[in-house]
Amino acid sequence: MGKAETYLGEVLGAFDFGAPVVGAIRFGQGHINDTFVVHTQPEDVCCRRFILQRMSPAAFKRPDQLMENIIGVTEYLGREIRRNGGDREREALEVIRPKNGEPYYTDEGGGAWRLYPFVEGTICYQTAETPELFAASGRAFGRFQRLLQGYPAQTLHETIPHFHDTEDRLRKLKEAVAADSMGRVKECQPEIDFMLARESDCSVALQALRDGTLPLRVTHNDTKLNNVLMDAKTGEGICIIDLDTVMPGLSINDFGDSIRFGANHSAEDETDLSKVNLDLELFAAYTEAFLEGAGGTLTEKEIELLPWGAKLMTLECGIRFLTDYLVGDEYFHISRERQNLDRCRTQCKLVTDMEAHWDELCAIVGRQCGK
Image (tube, rainbow, N blue to C red):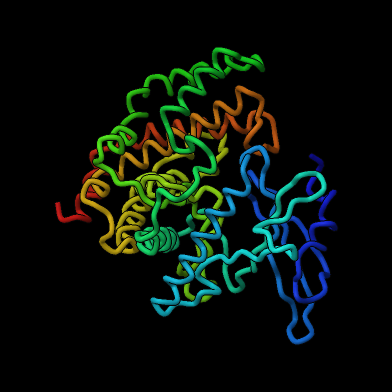
């Protein structure tokens, strides 16, 4: 399959934008999909924009199932937002179907494309510049849980099988180590040993799900700060984006991935590990806001295991970065050599920091539920 730009003209002609298209350029900092912002020129306003994406064929083998999930969840969210007196056009994504009426458009090279309106008056932050900003994202993701509590999670497709199956992620790492197809194992032995030493941790949440201790919910599964659009005037999180990984899952994983990404002040591929540290203030701010947004929908056990969600999502992400590095950087986009290995090392440092402050993390969560 060729570069996305090869098919861009064809794809632009497949959608009805309601006005002439005057430009389309790459947009955002995502690792997976090819994303473009499309500018149109209606007669009555200055400009109207759209987000056009080619879904990654490496990450998503069944775009039909992916879009069935997204359309189902966004339409449900729209109904709930309207029922609660909210602004449907700004508070939830809406899929715009191509002219052929299908959920997405398939180009001549087999690429699958989708279109959303651009949510104007919003900002997408890459890092939590203040505790208030991070808390705003927590309220938004907690609200996402609350609004979708009535959605039948079991009806969603598992668009990426075993996505947050930490046991399976570790198994794939072991396979990559054994194969050593790129000859990279020798430079990664400390990171490999780090992951293998925490093998029993990989089963904590999954065993709780198997036991029925944790309920299955509709989860986002990629709750980074940059997947929340913040209102430019109020600073509040108003719209959750990047719904590719919306699947049945665990609420503690959604919480944990936010902490992994946002409760520190370093880049995800920081090479100076002295700069990579868990920020307890940010952890506390996010915890309070996430539970506020969830509005009492989480069980006592879900709240108790929130620190485990943070540790497991960080550990799992490190496993994924390391596995991808060992097999030749097939999944995550890279802009330089060893970037995925550096990403892995930051996750290892964060896990170490969480373990060093474990009692404090549990105490912070306990205060939120009066313990």
